[in-house]
Image (tube, rainbow, N blue to C red; front, side):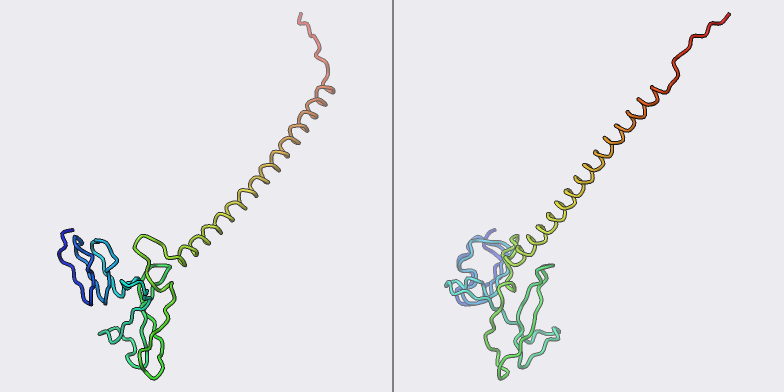
Length: 178
């Protein structure tokens, strides 16, 4: 990047971005710990630039969003199954927008990395698939062993029958044509 087309709103927002391109930072100290990056949007940065950590992002009164505007706080959420952003409302005491404890799963992880909850859920799903495949393989191995045993028994029976046929077969006779 060339350090152009960046937008920063807030005290010290995006101060470390020198060569980054097409970034948007909204909030005090947002992006101060970020190295140069391109095409990134940061709102209420997790690190908060001062190590305090902020897991909160509030949305209220957005045009055409159809969310309640009084006595509620709208919190940004992320659906871990499809990575879609959304919002949820929580009523606050006295109609004021009080700080809300947002669960860690509601905070997007850096792009390209699974969030811990999503990773654990994904790993559990993979473990379950592996267990099912192992059970299927074990069952197939038992079936193969049973079929092999049956084939050996049938081969032994065929040999017995052949031996019996040899014993009851009449001896070859010589016929002379005159």
